[in-house]
Amino acid sequence: MGRQRWQAVVAITVLFAGVVIIWLVQPTKREPGIPLVEVKLAAIAEAVAEYHRVFGKLPQTTSGSVDGTALVGGNSRQMEFIRWERDSLGPNGELLDPWSQPFRITLMADEGVVVVSSAGPNRVFGNEDDESHKRPLN
Image (cartoon, rainbow, N blue to C red; front, top):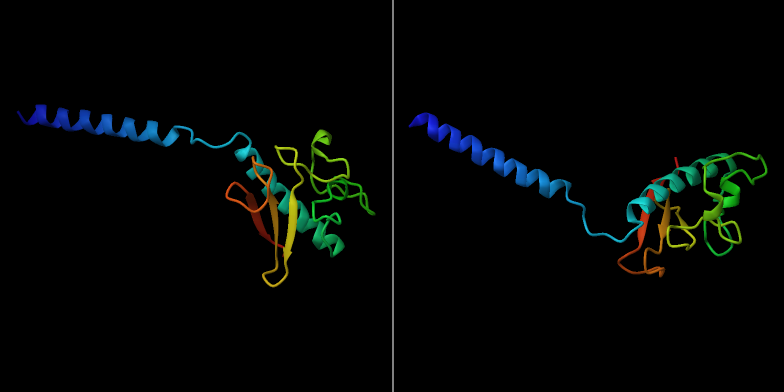
């Protein structure tokens, strides 16, 4: 009798573990492009921080977008801070997110950080689907 109980406990434990594993690996329902944008945000933030370290300013267009041209080697020292697909550069050299919108950079001088943002799938800044990445400049 003790052996049958032990086998039942093992079987229930294995079944429970299988359900938990399936639940954990099940993909979440997110907009297409979200995982890609998170990777790009982190890479851009790193490149912007390095650019700031070298040049003492942000690689930014007058509209506040990330100046991709400066980051991919179009700067006074011809230094490449990030590798970027040429078809993901906007007409003014800005880096574009997966929804073909310019990434935005903001310097939070009081905190010493740079924030790189994407407007997200709806292509509008200032709402719940925006994605951003914050990185210290030092």
